[in-house]
Image 1: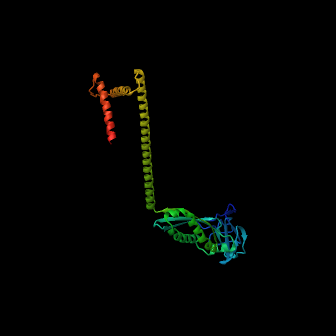
Image 2: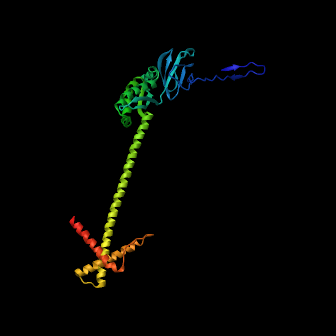
Image 3: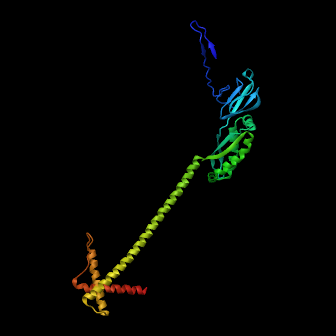
Length: 327
């Protein structure tokens, strides 16, 4: 507005700054930044609807038509009090709905469903979206809670996690047609979170930890069993090879003794070679006994008793053979 200041020095026009509106309601006027669901009076015959909104206009509180985005001439606005405008956003809105319910195995879970909704941009759709529902989000939340509390109690907790898509499909099927009657399209419904009670989660974690511990113990036991079996098989194979080596060693010793002494084949020769072999093993045993550190063993022994030693060893072998035959 222009105000004239009469002063003695000059008379210059100045523009007064309008008072700032600290309320959160959209600005009124033909170039308002946005409109809400409540009617906002216009002070002129034109309205400028934002690009992301669509609305309706009223004359003397009576519905007259749709207001598309952009600048529109409505009609003559007598005294700036006859025309009012309502508007809603045409953007896709994500409505987060949380609902607590009980599963088939008596576990309480809190389920979060994200519903993506958008107003229908046709005459009846805009009219219904503005005039039929006071709070569309609450209406959607009520539908979601009804579906979740009817579907989840049919499932166990594990099935709830596995069948989130089935729950989301049931929600979408339930609310799509009713919300169309209220002027909203339901684009998609998503189950974004399934949250059991904290104590239930802790119990499940403890059960899973116990199962993992048991599997680890079984694995360690199987590994120890495998090592023991392999060790026994290796030891048995080693003993077998060691026995074969000793047998070959003894055969070589016998052949060497026979060739070096010049024995002829016959019973007497075999007996003499056997006694010589036993005496040789006897001295080898004494040598191995003497190899230990700080080891003292007292054995009755004399040079003249070597034949007696061979006789004792031979008699022991024969007695063992007789005992084995008696069994």
